[in-house]
Image (cartoon, rainbow, N blue to C red):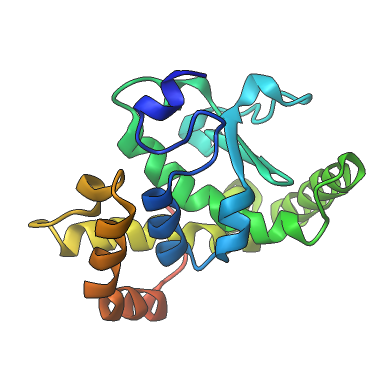
Length: 192
């Protein structure tokens, strides 16, 4: 797990670094307490080995309680930008999981609830079930806002500030009105 720190996104124990936590909180709207508690780990460390489906189909990571389990490719050097965008989506599932708690039983209940949610979405939306599921629409907010924010700030992208919590705080303050407007304009996760 030594390469966690080298990525500038995670501490050695898998917790989000301060700058990353601030940025993800701003773009996702997830409470800071949930972001402070979460640990991001390789998917091989969860008992179900989730996610099972291909990363190209949304299977790059899975939230279980206060853990995000991600495909190992995101832990490779040079993948930090793609990983940050993935995390901007995945942290949006933390409030969903938090309703169930962090115990083993609570995690199992959350997995069953999520499976039922996707099943209902499959009945309503067919092959677009994953993307059109309500919980996916809610979670995608963070990734969309991060992408739009990056597009709108090409001269000073947030990626350069991930390792400096104070600089990230100042950057977010400078762009707070833009971020608020993006939250207001979020269109939902569209179909490809």
